[in-house]
Structures are given as C-alpha cells and as structure tokens.
Length: 138
Image (cartoon, rainbow, N blue to C red; front, top):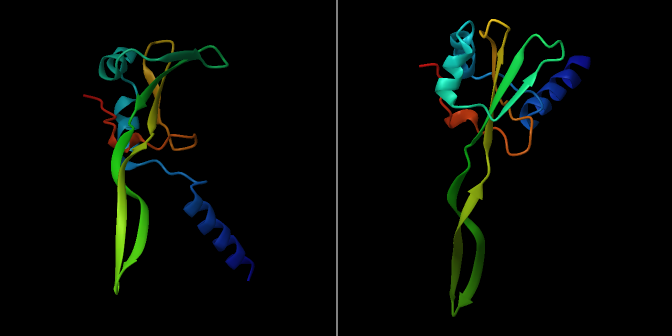
C-alpha cells in the first residue's frame, strides 16, 4: 500500500517537470566534448557571453545564452452567435510569441581542456529551448 503513494508522487514529479533527464543528443555531445580543447567550443558556439571561475579556482565555466524563441499562429479567442436557426462559430487567430532560451555551459580545466558539457534542463523561466540547438562538436 505504501508503494502506491510513492508511485503516485513519482508520476506527479515526472509530469510537472520537477525531474529532468538528459536527452540523447546532450549525452552524446557530453562524450564528444570531453577532453577537447576549449578553443573548439569557442570556434563552434562563438565567444562565450559569460565566464566564471569555479569555487576552487581550478576551472572556468564558459556559458552561451542562445535565444530559441519562435512564433506560432494560434486561436486566441472563440465566439458563437445565432443567426436565425444557425449557430455560427468564429475563431480568432493571432501570432503568439513563445519565448525560449538555451544555456550551454562548458567547464574547462587548467590545461584548457573541456571536462564538462551541460545544456539547460528547463529549470529556469523561458528555458527548455535546447531541442533545436546543435550541440556539436564539428
């Protein structure tokens, strides 16, 4: 009986997005980037928008913020009117902007080699937009 509660909690966490898993492209990119020169990441993604040292001071984390926003044409309102004996339904369409972004983080050691690669996993507002990003490397 106690397992039903744990199972229900796990299902709720998975459906609400509290638990995130690496995608196959991200896992593949992580294995491909590891051990490569930091210059390869800079050549692929361009100059990083942010660079910070880790707390131990032995590594540097480079980050790229990629805007992956898009527009869709959606029904934004609906109406219904009676015209004589006929019910007329009307849909009102508009272009809706969907803000998304992808944060790519590459950690580099003192030898300027990539030791970690991570793409935003949808933890922040406007995130979860990494699906359309090519992770590389070339």
